[in-house]
Image (cartoon, rainbow, N blue to C red):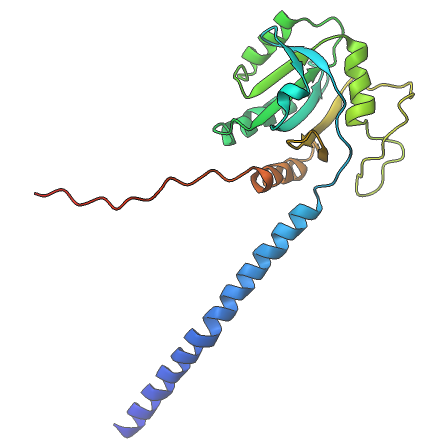
Length: 233
C-alpha cells in the first residue's frame, strides 16, 4: 500500500507540474505562432501607390468614380472574355463573393479590356457569370482610359524582367506592347492604396488574397450577449 501511495503521489505531482508549467508553455507556443503568422501576413501588405482618379460606367449604366468607392476595400481585375484566364478569374470572383457576401465594405471591381464593349454587354456578362449583385461591379468606358489607368495606376508587371519572387516591377507609362489580358487580382484598401497583387493562375496566391482580406477587413461588432431565462414549464 505504501508503494502504491508513493506512486500515486508522484503521478499527482507530475500532473500538477504539467498543468502549472506545461499548459501555459503550450498556450504560449500557439499564441506566438499565431502572432508570427499575423505579422508575416501584415508584412506582405505594401504601399504600391494610390490609384488615380477615374470615371467609368458600371453594368447598371451609372457613372462610377474613385471617390464613390472611398471607404471600401476593393479587389480589382481587368478582364477579356476571349482570353484564357477569363473563366478562372470569374470562378474566383464567385467564390470570393460567396465567402464575403455579407460585407458591404468590400467590392469586386472588374474592368473590361475588350474593344467596343458597352453597358448592355457587361450587364450580360455579370448575369451569365452569376455576379449580377451589388458587391460585384463591372466597368466599361473609353479603352484608352482603361489602358491608361491599368498602366499608370494599377501597373502592368514586366514579364521579361520579373524576379524569381514575382515582384511587381512597373513598366514605364509609355510602353507600347499592351497585353490583351491582366491575370492578376489587385487588393486596394479603403484609402485607394494598392496593397498587393495576386496571380489568377496560382491558387496559393489567391488563397493569400483571402487571408489578407480576412486580416484587414474590420471586425463586425458582436451582438450584445443577453442572459435569457428558461421558460417556465
